[in-house]
Amino acid sequence: MVSEAVRNLRTSILMSNPNQDKKVIMLTSSIPKEGKTILTYALAQNMVGLDKRILLIEADIRRRVHSVKIDRNNTVALLDLMMGHKEFKDVNPFVEELGFDILTATSSDMNAADLFASERFPKLLTELRENYDYILIDSPPILSVPDARLISAVSDINIYIVKWNKTTRAQVEQGLNMISSIRAPKQLD
Ligand SMILES: Nc1ncnc2c1ncn2[C@@H]1O[C@H](COP(=O)(O)OP(=O)(O)O)[C@@H](O)[C@H]1O
Ligand SMILES: [Mg+2]
Image (cartoon, rainbow, N blue to C red):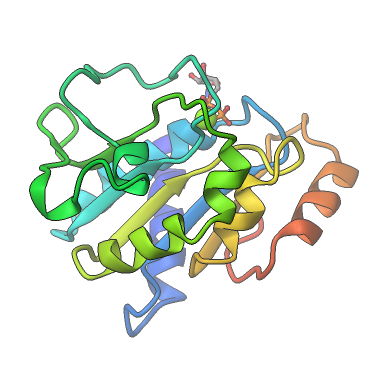
């Protein structure tokens, strides 16, 4: 069952992190449509139950179609904070229907890889770290674009999702090699 798998994953994260000093968790996978977004949301939902301050970042800003349907009209856009259009201290990222904070993906004229390669993302993350217990980053597929590689360099835990009977061994090996540091559970279906 999915809820059981999510609970197990949460337990693995907590056990690998006894001092709670690892708080930025990136989720990625080899290619699109392997369940990254769904799992990131499920994990966030689950961790809210621990009474922790949770932030979910939608970092797959190239995707036009969102698999999680929420009303995005009054949400806080990741790009607005990254570009300095808004300050974190002035916004309220809480989304009532989810029960946790979220920075949403909106499309940009700028190249996504350039954005994540710039100092903007690490700088924002430094500020966010002070305000949350856990920050979950829903990332683009690692074999398609460089973004997830760049994000993995500034995250504490990287979770690599494998779609059972679908993702090939070669894809997984290639993807894992691209991640700068791998300290997370390597198996999940
Ligand atoms: N564990 C799962 N079981 C069944 N369907 C799933 C599961 N995870 C994802 N999906 C479905 O697969 C599609 C892609 O999921 P998504 O999380 O958006 O993938 P990604 O973020 O990797 O592109 C969605 O339609 C979603 O409903
Ligand atoms: Mg996704």
